[in-house]
Image (cartoon, rainbow, N blue to C red):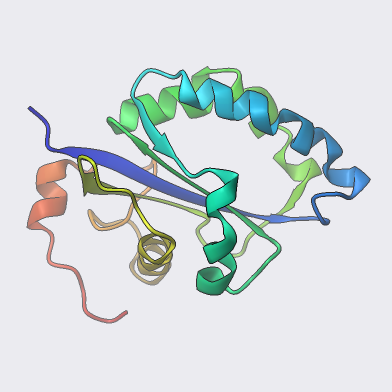
Length: 158
């Protein structure tokens, strides 16, 4: 039995405050997109809006939207991201978000029942930006296994 799940964080820099008309269509789709995630095969956990107050302290940018979730595996997350109705909203991201100059997404493995924190997420994003894709922090471009992650010796430069 697998003792680990895949955690993910992705960040987006919004073009306007959430109550601005520019963001209206995005806001109107949040509940629907969250419901798709919640009912997706392999979904384990996601950050709820009421949990996001701590994000500003960790990321120090209140224009960022931070999404974190946990999935049984990378295939489940990929299926939700690119093969569900989530793709309709995903394709429109330029309407609501500016391009982030750093890696905006990172994956890593967590023990089953572990809920990732904003500090975990920032550490993984910072590591990915400093070192590229490694078993410690990666994206869909890489297929690192749990064993790769367990055997990886994290560089101590962060």
